[in-house]
Image 1 (cartoon, rainbow, N blue to C red):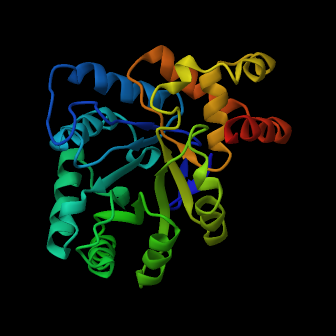
Image 2 (cartoon, rainbow, N blue to C red; image 1 turned 120 degrees about the vertical axis):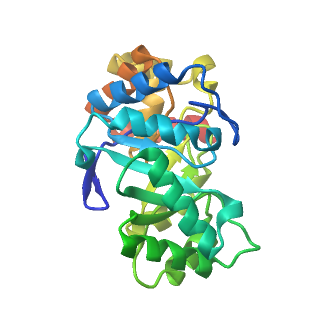
Length: 269
């Protein structure tokens, strides 16, 4: 377990993109399946649930809310995000309040700027997020898809509360964050959260991890997740219980430093 926002959080989370709809469009056809999957992941020790107001036009947040309702709120860590066209002060406040209502929770653990928007001053957005902390609607502030320069600006802009996390795309197929962003985040004490940690399905056809997977008695996907979790909280998405079991198993093992170096060598070339 790690600690984030004064809570114990699992080293791997569950992503919810396309559970209950896509880009601002809800889909109610598989609600029961998604709710059950999220709940099941929590029972397997995955207590970080990542969602966003954009997912299914807010419907995904509703599904997360239903899934977590049977658990002690203090035992679940909910991340959600405000979309880039809602970054003006009043819009941020409104978005967070609406997200909390859809999630049916008194507070959001970690609230992220989903994507930067150069047409809105970062100081305006972060000021609103700090107001949300003061109001108790959110507990912690973070960003997503911020490079090092934007992250530096966000850190400098925050006056009352620290920026605690940056959610980025990071996997064995995208090692670029290891060059500058991850080292910078570590130096600042920020948590990196990794979306698409399995390369958006590329791992299914991967053979470069076969020997390492055999060594550990694990699947190649499990090895890929174990690689990412050394420096980040990966948030793979799955609604299949067998796949969730597979993900949860990664909480129980770590790669050796030699294997980490070998994987980096194989995927850097």
